[in-house]
Image 1: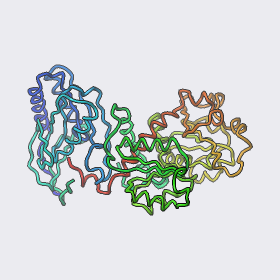
Image 2: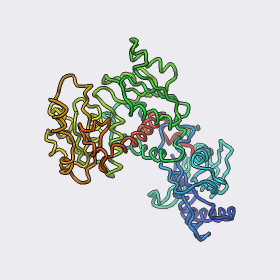
Image 3: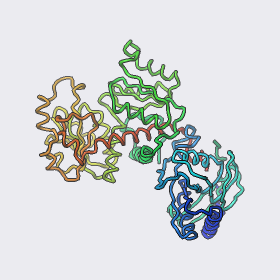
Image 4: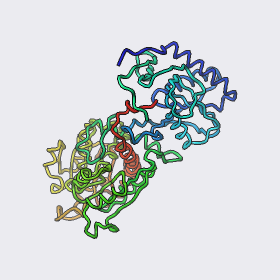
Length: 185
Length: 315
């Protein structure tokens, strides 16, 4: 593995999240309907940060929850059992505009799993998708509504998000080169 | 997070880390059971066979429900209605089930080692639901899950297991799990049912019930297994109740925060007074709820393939 390249540093991550928050506010005029659901690992922390910024834009708290998609993945029989994180949604999603928050958009399969998981919890009025990094290589017809940064990548590269909430020394998005291409599902 | 086993055969061969992985995973599955829609698609299209060559209600129902909540199809196979009665061997029965493309065989058998044997002859995932007096791994997992949830930890706790230890597969699995997770385990009961040899596993053995429960954080009661006792191991049920049964007077001499556990089925008035079974310190029914979450976690984990998650991740 070669030296990682920093594609977003802490100020850039902060600016991207502020911009995404403003775009969410612009798109959704009726703010009390909007709830944020972060997808672990990474998306949950980003959702909490976005909720804070949105609260200061709208002057009211924005509900934020955690949506684990592990049990809805389509590759469970092909890999070691992944870690199942708790889903924690302390509100009803029926009739709400749910903004899914993920760190990296790649194949689109996580997003599909998230929409599937959400389906079991209620019927949102709308589902929107916010991601910090879109690295391309979609395998499903999925498109993000809000993107922090588009990063063209090759399949043998890996994107890594480091956040202080998760114990990192500083916020950073890194691009790493794998020695071998990652097998696709 | 560490799990790459294809089967769950016993607790003895698991590491503390593997046990903790199951308990952590079960915590997420417990939350699934509290949702309006309690079903997740993780095992969709898989077939689970409950091969119960020995009677059981709660374990079988618990596994059945666990499999259904993971969207698997379940077949129940019991001795009464099976060709095992017609002289078919266990291996042939299991191979027939596999020929029907069963993905998981959950086996309860009166012979110790039956699940291990099946795991060697089958391609399917094998889960031990109790083999003879050997082990009952999912019971130990739900017991440790309940203790950890209630007390916040397991290491350093004093756990007393009271009753028929000799014939109890629950006791053996519990002892392994508790010791691996750092608890202090005391065994107590009639000397015929609690031989000193258990000290070799790393437990304390005593035949004085008041001393055994005095400093206990957890009192785990076991049923007297009439069906497994080949000859009388103590004079009678009445005397057992008098000497070892948990009653109000005995409970008054324990720590006020000590929890009462029992794997079920309970014999009210034998090993436990009826009102104690229903009191606020009893977590017997929570054990049943947790059993479902733990069994979902086990099915989910053994289902995983051998590709490490980082190589397969699709973020």
